[in-house]
Length: 213
Image 1 (cartoon, rainbow, N blue to C red):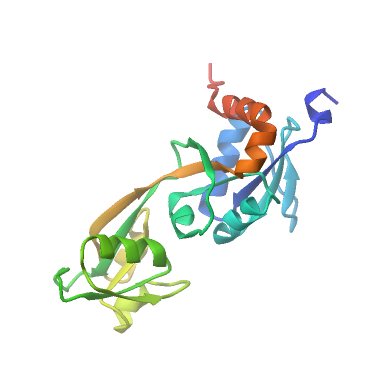
Image 2: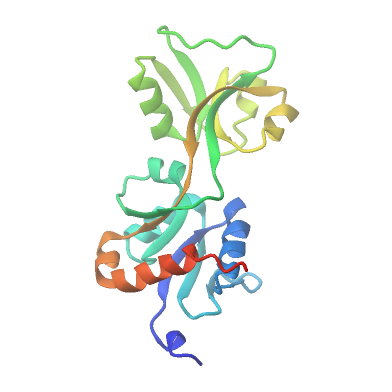
């Protein structure tokens, strides 16, 4: 066992879903490969640097805020919806997507001062976006399958993350307007960072190193 593995590891929360594969690939390239045994949600990386918790994307800020995980990796969309405040230590060059407003392909797009109804799970982002532009908005909260809202007539538009647009196309929808680029961040509980800043800064150096020859 090497010296580094004998030290207490940094605690890192990672989101289930689309980002995990990209994070695993990046970490493996930097000598910090990890995997989760079947049905297990806690793992160690091969270097002994990290203890990793696999959590639901929307719950990740809560784990970091309460110090269960000192660090986390998530999108700016998740941070926008969170009531907590963190140190953003690094912005990654992978996993980015776009927050967009989408609607039916056969319907004209119009946002005016008379207001609009929008279905979304991104309540804070949507409220602030329309408020800043002086457009009254009725927000209908959905937790999943928001694409159904325009199809079934619940709301003419949705605000959602769009990566490939394939789900929109399959439901006869299209992006009407890109609202904001979404980036992936390494975040830290402020108190945790103050206690472990040297080790965390070294970890950041490790994930920034290019090990390709």
